[in-house]
Image (tube, rainbow, N blue to C red; front, side, top):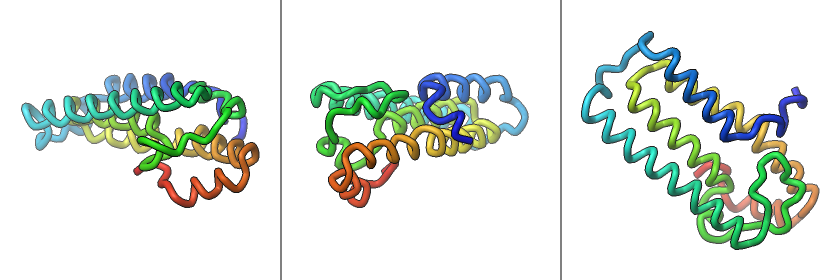
Length: 153
């Protein structure tokens, strides 16, 4: 379904996923994560997520390339150093970790299922089309980057 590719800003998709997690809470609670354990994991995950995403955005800005996920065709360079030497998608990884923190906070099985749907949606309708566009634009140097650095971690 190509019609969804690059149509919804990824932060909006993440926000919708978080709202859906919140709305569906209470169906399948995970008592193992209730209380302090869940709160601690939530805080660590959310902090790591924001930090990783911010480092990725900063790297793009330093390289003077676009951070607009709906227009990867406007990229001016391949950023492959810093955090981008470890993950091709630190901003999406950051959003995923923030949502994981929401899952830990809610201590809810359905939240983890929605997280899996978020990852699938972002991979299919955002990351794969981005990679296709960037491969067309940058060719072999981008293919070498794809071969060297994992999509997530």
